[in-house]
Structures are given as structure tokens and as C-alpha cells.
Length: 470
Ligand SMILES: Nc1ncnc2c1ncn2[C@@H]1O[C@H](COP(=O)(O)OP(=O)(O)O)[C@@H](O)[C@H]1O
Ligand SMILES: [Mg+2]
Image (cartoon, rainbow, N blue to C red; front, side, top):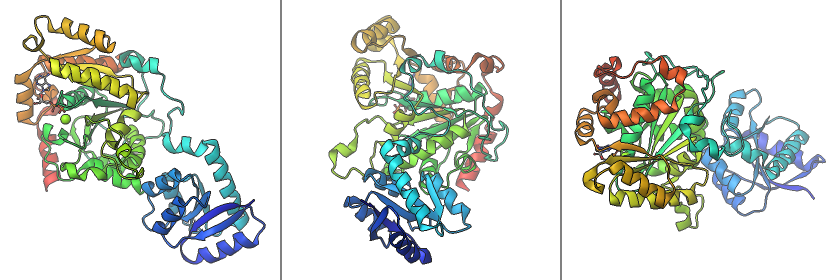
């Protein structure tokens, strides 16, 4: 029996291809010639075909469209204009692995269709689509994730020029991909952003190129916290570029300006109503590029773990929590942040069990902020450790002291604790967490932050403000 295929081929190639496929003794049969992408997606959903042959220049073809086709179980073969290698590269960037010139013999195209269907059946295409270059296809070793400080082996990294504020991307050739740290925490403002911003600033101060990504689709606040007047959400722009296959390290570096030496930020969506611009399929393509741009990718996540498609029958509809879930699934290290008071701790215990259910691969390291005796009684460190051990099996949480004065002053100045209050107790606790993640060889050559770090003179930030507002 012949393989039923859909075609969505543009221009003069369409008619000869279809007649060629039908007249030659190929193993495929064209069941519908789609006129545009909408027609193709509707036909794909009908379940009549097993594969699709589409053109690179099909209007509105992007990662979301290809995700729809994958959800419908269709294998994809892409065609580019003869000699138009760029179109072929774009298709590959979008995740299409079987790509031929449109004037290839029908037998070759039919053979590619059969191979694509076989690959899809064997799960090969799925594995290459969802994994990024250089990462193992298997799940991360949970034992290795349990102790991020101990398990993060030194990796060679071709660092971006620290003093360079011209947005040049890191040289991906020969450098190992960076590590993703997702900073999550339950509802109630436990201090996720403070932890994410300070950790990122500390890693950068240790000489580690770091990209801080604001993926909170409810209350993005990284830009404001770091005093960046942000008009264009960098993450949404990166997702747009990723969904059309045009996001490379250089473009991502341009979208993520450097706020202090070694620290770039990809700002979040200022208006939370813009959350559909940060989609799961686009993010899948953002992470590998982010790993090229920085050695550490610190992601400030939202609180909500609900998989909203359970609330809807349209499984392909955009999901508000996609960014948080995608970051948690992608992360090499997950930090779960809770507030050090009775309500915050109870939310954290429940949140950890929810996190286990929703993202079983996450082996979170727990961080408790605003630790103070006035909220839990004398000896707050011991009490919190005991409670978390008893109710959530958590060992050795990172405890960040309550440090209202330093946090307020840093927020008011629009700077990280690292820049503004390096001797504050909260900064010291988070500096310890960062130092534990960085291989000794790297951290040992770096000076600890002083009261006035050389890169914190405000010059970079002022230049950045001018650029982003001007
Ligand atoms: N260790 C701390 N001590 C005192 N205040 C803190 C501490 N960590 C965070 N905060 C304050 O708590 C508030 C919420 O923190 P934030 O990081 O924005 O939380 P989230 O991102 O979880 O909503 C902010 O005003 C912040 O300054
Ligand atoms: Mg926040």
C-alpha cells in the first residue's frame, strides 16, 4: 500500500512534482494538494495522511506550524528552490531533517518521504527535534542533579569578550553548551527574582558569562530590578526569531544586552497580556542558542505549574505556563525558592510535591529566603531545616537571611545585591551558592566583589538605558 501524503508546494514546482510522484513507480500517493498553510494544517488534522511535502517559502511556516504537524503524527519533507541553500538551512533550523531541492527526481523525494515516516516511527526525528546540539538524548542523571555544586564538572567555554558591549555572540565552535538554572518558587513572592538576579550577578562576578532570562509570564520584573528601562521584551523577540528559524548566537546576544561585565539580560514581557508571545515550541529553539551565548543561563520562572491544556481541548493552543514548564524541563539545575515564614514554608512543601508530579526530571535544590526568628521562633535556621526535612525530605537547604534594608536599597537603586550591597548577609548567602556551582579553577582566580565593583560604575547601565530608550 502506498504512503498517503499531503503536498503544500509553492510556485512552478508543484504540478511537475505531483504528476512525477504519481506517474513514477514511487511508494507514495498524494491524497491532497494543499493551497496554503491553513489548508495543510486542517488536512493534517483530518488524519488522512502520514507525511507532508512542503516548500521552505510556504507563507507563515514556523515552528508552531511544524509542531502542529508533529502533533498530528505527520513526517515532514522540506523542499527548497534549486540553488537556494539558505532556504534549506532555514528548514533545518526549524527542525526539518529531510530537505531536498524542489527539482530533485520524484523517486528521490518519495524515498525521503518513506525515510522520514520510518524515522518518525522509530522516534529518531522526535529525539533530534527536542534535544539541543551537544546534549545527551537520555534524561539527566538525577543523582548528579541532586547536588549541583558537586556535579557540575568544569566545562571549557569560549567566553564572550567581557569588556565588549557590542553584543557580539559567543563563539559556539568548540565550546561546550552552557548550563541552564531554573529559579522557581510557589505563589506569594517568595523571592524568586531576587535569587535569580543575585545568583546571575554573582556568577558573572566570578568571571562566568551569564545570561539572565525573565520567563515569568505573570509578573516579569528582572528589567526593573536591574534598572533597565525596557521597551522591547527581549524574550518575546527571541521567541519570534526562533519560531522562524532565524535565531543565532549573534542575534540573541543583540537582544540580550550586557548590563554589567559578563551579565546579559533577556527581558520579560512587561505587559502580562503578551504571554502568548512566549511559546513552548519557540523556547525549545531558544535554549540551545542561549547555551551558546553564555556559560550559565539563569531563568527567572513564574510560580504556576498548571499545564493549562488540561483545561482546554485545544492541545495546540498557547499555554501561559509554557515558559515556566519549558525552563524547568530544560534545566540542568532547578532551584525551588520559598519564604521563611509559616505560610511560605507550607506553600514550599506543597509546591515541591507538585513540582515532582509535573516535572519529574527536576531534582530541586531548595532555597529559603527571608529567614528570621520573628517569623518562626528562635533558631530559625534549625527550625526551618527540621520542618523541611520532616515534611518534604529536604536536606541541606540554602538559607538566605532576612535582609530588608539591603534588598530595599538595591531595588531602589535598580542594582543587584552584588553591585549595591556586597557585604549584606543576603548577598553573602547567595554568593556562596554561586561559588559552589563554579569550578574551583575558575572561581579561584577571580577577586570577590568589593563595595564598589569596577564594572558597577553605572556607565554600562547608563549607556544601556540610552540605547534601549533612544
Ligand atoms: N532575603 C530577603 N530579605 C528581605 N527581603 C527580601 C529577601 N529576598 C527578597 N526580598 C523582598 O521580597 C520581595 C519579593 O521578592 P521577589 O524576588 O520580587 O519575589 P518573587 O520574584 O518571588 O515574586 C521584594 O520586595 C524583595 O526585595
Ligand atoms: Mg519575580
